[in-house]
Length: 405
Image (cartoon, rainbow, N blue to C red; front, side, top):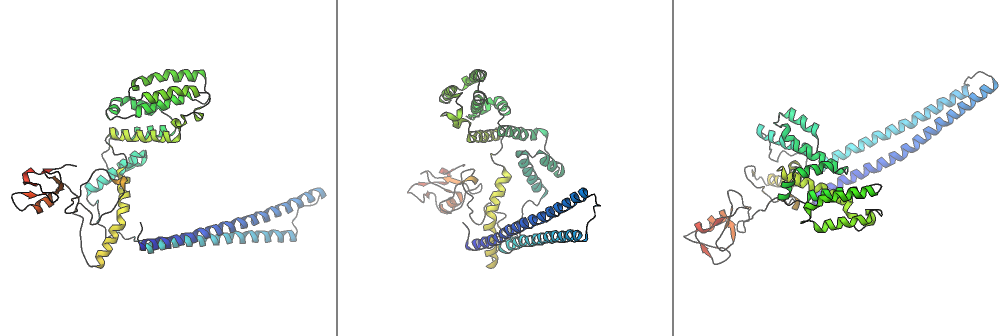
């Protein structure tokens, strides 16, 4: 939700953008009419000259322009020049309006980020940042860009480290192009690892490949036999996916009608292909120890959401002549909600001190089952025994237990 000042700033920028869009539309309409008029003048002049040429050829006279014709040509050229000059002038006016949008943005939004503490100042920090950026480009399949960064940043990236990214991108590209062979080959090589993590990826890949064989562009007896022979691969999955296999066998009934006219049309829908791609990405990242989302993208999104509140609190503190350096601390001075997508592990907030637990202030479990932070525990302990702040239970410090979340 935007604050009042933010809403006003957005409204001011939006108003300026609407002016630019309106001017673009007007210039486009005027330019179109001017060009049509110029083309019409040139075409008329061309027709007149062509007509004169034919008359001269039929009469056997010399092809010479009269003074009147020369005057018409010069007048036409002047009109065309005036029209193009008018278009050019309007185009310059649009450039001025576009540049004004930038000035309005600078006026209404903070562009000075100097109050925010700087990071990545040491050589080691910069090297770590370059490695994260390089990993991001490799995940995206931008190999030339990643190799340029490795070379210019003097990063230690071996071919062995790059290979998982390259293979993963090639397989994802294959799935997007409806080619299953690379993904099937990868799944078969990693069969045991996929089994251990309970993944259904290999079965789903074989399922999709079976459907592609059965419902080819021109269903024939041969494609039916190919699909029937291929179905033998489902034997190793029969215990876990018996119901799905039965549904696949029923697809033979609809071979000539087409799967789109069957109850199983969703098996090969675009959503099914997208789910297959997402499932492969998740399992492949898990096997090579990579997070599902790019750490760089996560950090940039979180930073973009956090930057505004940090600038706002810095502005308020400077107005009140307060100073607070939060760089050495593990928490920001304010809470910023990043949404469910940015939650990667459980956190414990002490109900007594209302602060998040960390390594220096871990959650402590009392004998009664209630949990408070270590700092709260030390503040509440004043004698041989500690009384739980939520129930009558008492215990000594040695009876409390640290929790690892």
